[in-house]
Image 1 (cartoon, rainbow, N blue to C red):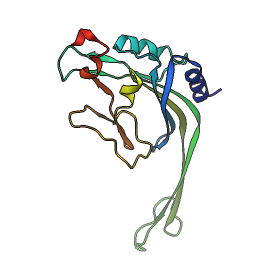
Image 2: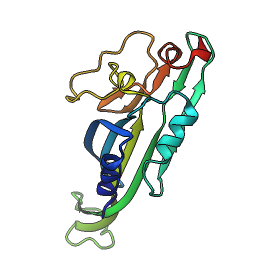
Image 3: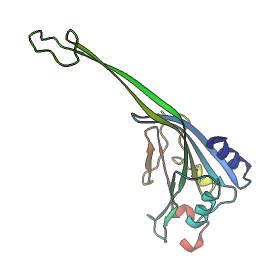
Image 4: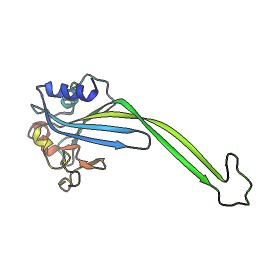
Length: 197
């Protein structure tokens, strides 16, 4: 069973998980090809500390991770404080990308001494390179459904329509297709964390 099916089954079978959004994309670079699936999820009962959310995220799937961005807090009672949201990536190789190129060299100067390997002023070089194709699955975790549904947090379904980000929101560019806010402000946490008031 591939990692996508394993992860999707684990998330759907977990009664403590709500899948808010799922996004598919393909990223092709000079050296590899990635088929990416992003799951945006929340715990059914909200969790509001970095420690609780980190434990929740790391307990979702029993596969080896490719990369983990940990939840971290910079919260006290200041307006500019925030909790950085975590995510986890799983990846496996699913195939090969084979690239074949042909380069033709043609010399126009008839007076030039012959180059090695040229026949009648022409030379063709064929090259082949092979790169891996990967399946990548990202799980993005938010404290609760209300925070996940704040404009700017979940990518728009149409990547040509930008999210409505309010001024002052901290954002990161998650990829060229959309902006995703990966922070929760202390103001959002205060109703659930009286210690921050």
